Amino acid sequence: MKNSFTRRDFIKLSSLFTASMAVKPLHALSISDPWQQRYGTPQKIIILGAGMAGLSAGMELQKLGHQVQIIEGQLRAGGRVFTARNMFADGLYADVGAARIPENHDWTMKYIKQYGLQLIPFNPSENDYLHVINGKKIRYTSSKPADLKEYPVALSAGELEMGWAGLSTNPFAALVANVGNPAESSWPPSAIAHFDKLSFKEYLIDQKFSPAVADLLMLGWEDKRGMDMSILELFRELNLSFRGARNKIVGGNDLLPRAIANELGGIIQYGTKVIDVEQDESGVTVTVVKDGERTTLRGDRVICTFALPVLKKMDFVKSLSPQKQRAINEMGYWNLSRTVMQVSDRYWKAEGFNGFAATDQPSEIWDPHYKSSAKRGLIAAYIKHTDSQLFLKMTDAERYSFSAKHINSVFGGLHQYLEGGYTKCWGEDPWAGCAHSIGNRNNMTELLPQLSKAEGRIHFAGEHASAYHGWIQGAIESGNRAAKEINSF
Image (tube, rainbow, N blue to C red; front, side, top):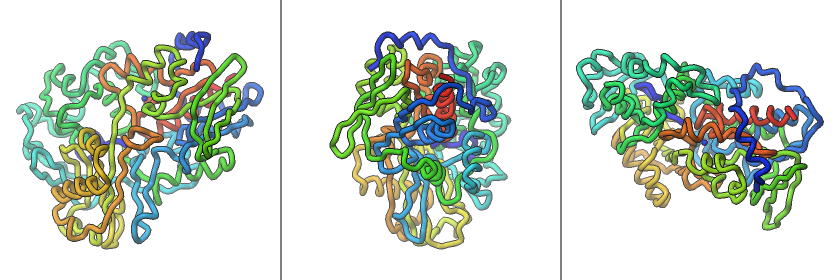
């Protein structure tokens, strides 16, 4: 659920198990890693959550002959991979969770190919885009960026001469020199670890650049009050998730979790809420509630994939090691919202626009069906940070009004074509509590290494326990990593 960094688009155990925190950080798992053969006797594995981490772990463990049970509180699989469908006319749909799939995300691409799903580019190559900053609209195309001088930001003369390419690379020279492998869970290298205390703007000042560079490069994403995201979180994102094209699945991104869930069949127990997790030397006990009835499940090991805001509310967290508790409680995460409006006419096309824009509200706007030639369509507003927090206190009607006003300020004329809409605020989702995790200042070095570590018989997966925060890739990779850990016993 991320924005592109470029001009167009730019995280009840006894003391017996606390010793596990002394284990060295796990290495990143490669799709070519030959781990997928069973090493020991089959185990009974209970997986908490049927998001992409739980689904991928369950599928791989089942293939290896382990007995798997997935517990899911919702009535669907996929977690934060969620496509709004069956609520719009003419078969229209829109991804309101994970929206973009970078072509270099090898784990995600592997599973997409495995299920024969088709991809199309997320961004159109035709017609014009818009940037809106300090009230000024700036038009550009995918092949021709707007002149930096058009932007009402305080760049130095030297920065203006650098152009977009220079501004996108030169500020990061101190990090590039010692980048190492950003996919490793032990990242960052000691040579650049001290930068973790700095936000992007603070880092720019430290490197003798204007903080206004961030206003341009993070347009559509950066909060007006400044971001607490660590420069190392941002730099890792640039290296892992912003190389090459970004795509989406034809028919909606939720077709991927649907395909996996269909293959897994009866091992997913829907409508079941996890109350507690306990472990001893011989196994784990998971207490659940379904239809008001409390029962216990017994297994050899657990994989917990719950998002951080959900996990931190669970009592069993208090039994984990102090290091793990701190990471769960303090790791940053963002609330983001999407409002999708149905219109009788995609009127922006008449003016040569493709329906895509990035603003300093901060927000993005896009046309989920930009390739369609039909008049009726959808336009989505991706509302972030401070404004998304306001959504938590709004009714749906107020959210529609807020979003419609914003879209109309960018692509004027919305109201005469507006037919209705759907809104999703991830901060209020009881099964997620956030859109995704994020490494704020000092989180990358102090907290993130703890999130992926197992504690006794409890293993952890999810985008927050990976190098790919907010991406399907992080969920899948961490699910496979947890499966490998269990399979090694």
